[in-house]
Structures are given as C-alpha cells and as structure tokens.
Image (cartoon, rainbow, N blue to C red):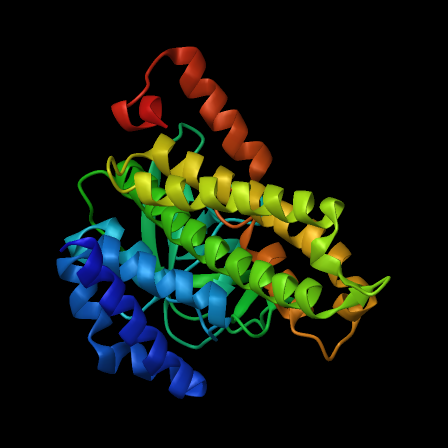
Length: 318
C-alpha cells in the first residue's frame, strides 16, 4: 500500500471517528480496522493511534496490537493485557502458586479476562490468562482513555502455550511502543495546532503573539522534535525490532515533553483553565509517556545496545 492510499484511509477513519466520537470502538470495528490490522499492520496502527492522540479517543486499542504481536495463539481472544507499572517494561505479574498471581500494573478498565506476563528469577517468561479480578481497580490514570492501575489478586484460568514466551513478550513490548509512539505524535500535533491558533489570534502591543521572535523559536523547537518523533515512529516499522521501537518511543517522549512545556507556557493563563482542551491532552501525554517504559529505561536500553555493538541496520540509519 502506497502513501496516498494510507493517507486516504487515515482521512476516512478520521471522518468516521469525528462523526461519532462516543462510539469509537464500534466505529473502528465497522470501518474494518481489525481486518486492516491483519493485512497492513503499519497502516492500521499508525492511522488509528495517531488519530487517537489527535481526537483523544476513549478506550485504547492497544490490547489488540499486543495480542496480535504475541502470536497466532492469541487470534480471536477477547482479553485485556496487563501492562507493567508506569516507567518500566518488566512484567506486572508474579506467581503466588499454580492457580494465583499477584498483579501490580496498568490495564484497561473492563470485565473481560486479562492476559498477564510473568517473569521468574531466571529471566524466563510465561503468559497466563486470568479471570477478571474481583478486587476493585486502583486509581484511574486517565478515565477518558480507560487506563487504571491494577493492584489485585487474580485466578489463573490457563497458561498459554507459546513456543518462546520471552520472545513473545519482547515482541509485544516492541509493538506496544510503536503504537504509543504514534499516539504521542498525535497528541503533540493537537497541542501544536491549538497553540499556533492561540498565538495567531491573540495580540500584545498591537501585534500577534506569534510574530514575536521568542515565540517563533519556541514553536520551531516543538516542531523540530515533532518531526523527529514522527520520522522515528515511521522508521521503526522498517525493522520491527526492540531497539527501533525503543528509539521511536524515546523520541516520542522527548517530543511530547517539549510540546506540553512550551505549549502550556504560550497558552498562558488560558491553558490552565478547565474550559480549555489543553489539560485533556496534557493528561493523555502524561499517561502515555511512561507506559511500557519511560525515558530513563528506554535510554538505558539503547545505551546497552550501543555498548554491545549489536545494532540493527535501521537503528544505524536513524
């Protein structure tokens, strides 16, 4: 699929979601996104998750991306994946006994079964399906996006038989990071757009705020980091390995941090009001940035890859 076709799909999906924002999940299914995900995962993920950031769609589709990356054993499974605690990619579950696991992570709110990744003391991973915990979920991270903290005890229903659970978890983390990178790019786009509109319409000393050199320089920095993040997210699909996905997520976090700091400053007092939409994008950015590894962990991972000399061609090119 060429760039023009991908752009048409994105535009059509944007129109469909904008028309019925309250039915986002149903609209995605009716649009044929799940079929597109099976045939053209790059187009499906990059389009939907960028729009999720721009439009602040309710409920994330990240579970679908993670389950698809885990392998064909998970095809057709309706489950929520328990993510690690914010800031890390280490699995969120620990086994109490053969039938019980303890959870401490992040998950989409709901009542469907959950998929939990476990890691033993020797570094080996396993994937288990659990019944939805009876315990009430913890504090919500972003009620609009559906993310809540999961601190509970869950009953194991089955251990999923995969050839290499460690490799499956690594693939899930990489796929999730790519998707989150696109969503952060979308959040940054919306922040920039509303800020440019603001500085173009507001005046100081009888001149638009956007005409001042200091404002131009700050927005130029935001735009630069946004372009780096967008290119990194796209390049991560060329060689879908762990380092490329980690680099894309790190660039997206850097871009997001630049956007939320500069844009909030340039929006002034209006950006702090409840009536303005900026706070909604700020909350979404702060929620997404640490999922599946924050900046510190990603930089440590990339540093280890550089020290080892085990660089993929795509990472060298970046």
